[in-house]
Image (cartoon, rainbow, N blue to C red; front, top):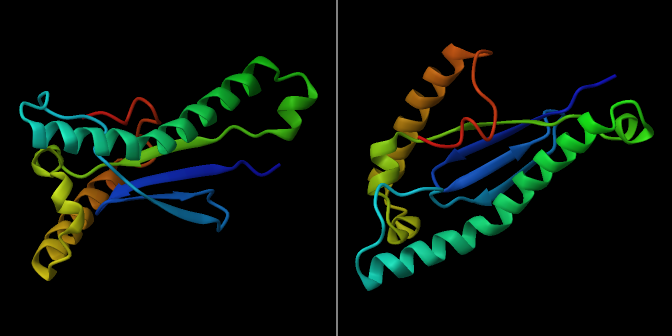
Length: 144
């Protein structure tokens, strides 16, 4: 019996989903949380755009958790034979970087900005991998 593992990587504006067996899909990512509530019209519009962008990703993640719960509940029935548990883990950019991101940063494709994000991504990923396999699973690992 193969156990499917899903990897969800948040980095440089993309969520990359992999089933661990070769299937990979990317989605645009938006911050899941902010350090403070929006204070002006521009910040409110940015947050609305981010929340709308997160809607489909969060619906998918919620459905994965729901199917996992059904799988546990019906573990002695055919449902559990047809549906395997899916583990989702996240790797997040540093909190300070995420807090400083604004909607307009999605459009910043400058060489300097991309190199900054790639460099941070390498550092964060190395630190995450050093903890492997003792890393939490989604949703416990989703917040800062």
